[in-house]
Length: 466
Image (tube, rainbow, N blue to C red; front, side, top):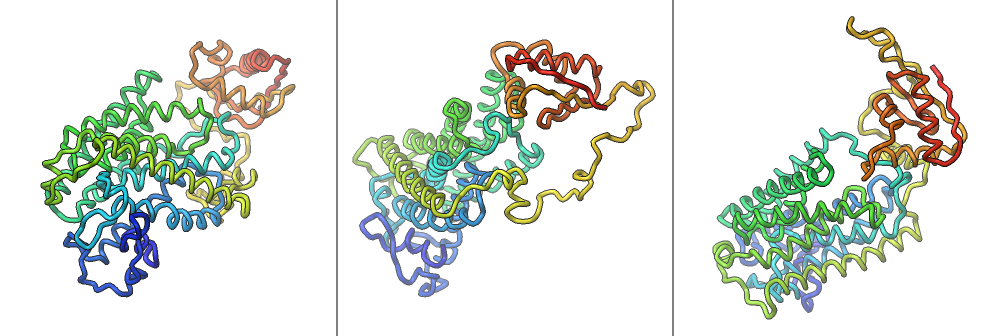
């Protein structure tokens, strides 16, 4: 970004499509007191602030193909993507001339993007979709349900994002002023509204509201309000947030139907949410807020405002998708983007970096299968929580795991009585071995035999190991 990215994004416009100013290369020819046009911000500061956007966008893309890619090819991808996709897009939307007037072709058209709905979120979401259509799915997906490692860390991360987004959106006013306050207020309201609407829709659809859904709703609201934050009233932010929570929830729920493996819903939240927010910016933009913040009247557009916003969003979507598809295809064909199955099973921390996120020592790896006796309250019978393993034979491990995963999913029909009998006591499943804590071993063995014989259409035998 420092060496040439900033020059490509914010240098003198070359036909409205790319920038170039030689003094911006490494900022070698820029005085520390030279201001960015039409602001009170030194170019040094502007370069560093905009660098944050350039850094965060490929990080968002990584959420789409997380848990299956090699680190080296990803580093090359970041360099190519930032140069070939992000820098041109940033110029199209945000570049200005010496007077501070729009210089990129989308900016001159009148497209509004206060803090990156088009440049960051649409670009990241559509690029993530292109990448996962080129690359394979994670091993075991969608047969295995893949849940967050820690809901505590998930909620902590969502809280940090919510707080940091005030700098993301409020800071795009490039000053401590009324427009920054307006962006902060709209962002806060939209995040809370989207969290609420996502939670309500999930509650009605799945029967229970979840903390993961709440966190996803917060991010969806922040994504959608990003392009509008400095241009809309708090009530506009409320409407954007409520719509974003519902629309993004539906988009995420459609993922199993379309059978693509978007690890962290980068497309469903950032792509769909960013596109929705770009359109709603044209609906809820306030001419008064725009003038108060920029000092200029809301620029006239040749097309209706929402048509201009749709054009900008569509252009960013198509450009990002096509170029990213080509980049990922070339890297994957020439170098290999994905891990082998053994390394993926071992985990990227260990296989790619030689470390682990949570170093709990060798105790878990060396622990014997038979658990030590635990102290129990006097009212609990000594054998009330006995541990044992039921081993199934007569079916392939993959077929057993696939059938068990399907049984664990919510469906239109109630679960089989045998499933309801064994499920409360199952602790872990590994291959054809079902580990139990509690329950009668004979009953558990018989129920598993009947359950999987019915599911697989072939005789399955079971025996108990203690």
